[in-house]
Amino acid sequence: MLGAIALSTLRVYSQASAQQLREMAIKATALDTANANRERNMAYREQVLTRDFDSSGKTRWERAKVHDVLLVDESPQRMLLEEDGKPMTGEAMKGQQDFLRRVIDIRKGESKSQRDSRIAAFDKKHREYRDAIAELPDAFDFTADGEETIEGRVCQRMRVSPRAGFVPKNRYGKIFTQTEGRLWIDKQTGEWRRAEGTVRETVNLGWVFAQVYKGTTARVEQQPFPQAGWMMSSLWYRGVVRVGLFVHYRREQMASYWDYRPMTDAILEDALKTGYPKGTLRSPGRAK
Image (cartoon, rainbow, N blue to C red):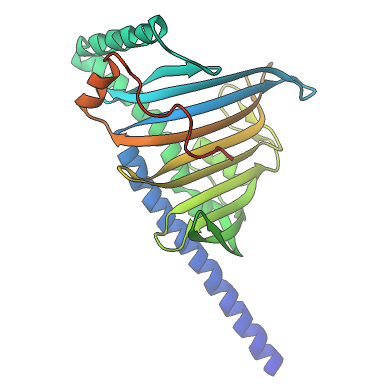
């Protein structure tokens, strides 16, 4: 009898623990949606290193770029600041600024229908990704995996695995059905701090013959920024994606993001001045 009581108590505790973890994931997802809405109006700087591989795993080419991501009439516009270690200076920087001026002029001259169409196209892509993230609490089973301190912040670490019977509403959500990984949630704020996952079986996204291959791995982190709150700070992935019948992308990408600021007219004006850019072209952090 004592054994049965102990087993029953253990089962109740496990169920409560799993539910508590799911509630943490629900809160983190809601906070992430709020963060994404703020990010929609942010300017920031990014550093991206991309490597392309052949079928044997040998590097075919490597490219490194640093951009400022600015908003021009509610749509993002990248401004190249450095390529393969060479900063844009002199005529190269002037060329970037001239291009930005042309973009500004073109958008000022748009008709209402052209402007609405441009903004809607960006919003659709943004919304599809956010809708997939919103499904995360229903897509996975969560198992406690201890605590871990990341840069001074105590996080609840949990393992995630596909939940049986989950049917994604979004094409990107199909990836969740074949992904296993881990999630770190900041215990003080409820924000997610780090997420990583590996695709255990090839996933067909169901459009233009797009497939994400087995073994594709990704890791993403976010942290609080002074003028923006919690925002993405780094992204790393490596894997194989097929688009169409024959085109395979074997890629590794490491990206860092920093200097988040609410977008203003003054930021756009500064980007067109002599002496731009200011600040570091090296990420204060490091893409994992």
